[in-house]
Image (cartoon, rainbow, N blue to C red; front, side, top):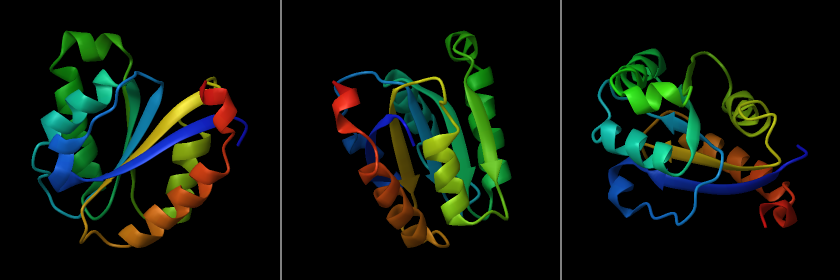
Length: 145
């Protein structure tokens, strides 16, 4: 990984507490095992406001979650104009998914933010978070400025 990474994680039930003071190219992984993520519109709005143009979904209903995010993005002329990308990751290991988040979502950027939103009860959530913390600590913080 040759870029600087600002990393944060948040519980999907605490989305109202997300406070980030500057925009930065951002990719967000949402891990959920429920069909309907409460406040998904709020999550997408907050993430796009801080620079998110790449959403990933993982968990039992990752495909449905991706479709819901697509619907939110497609329902906004502004969001569509940003070229927001969504992907779902079913049947992949947490390590592979997190590696994709950190290494492949924003390849042309030197400084990025990677976010992981999660349900505490989601399958393998601890593996996702542990891998994300390892990769976040491997970035070059001086590139963040």
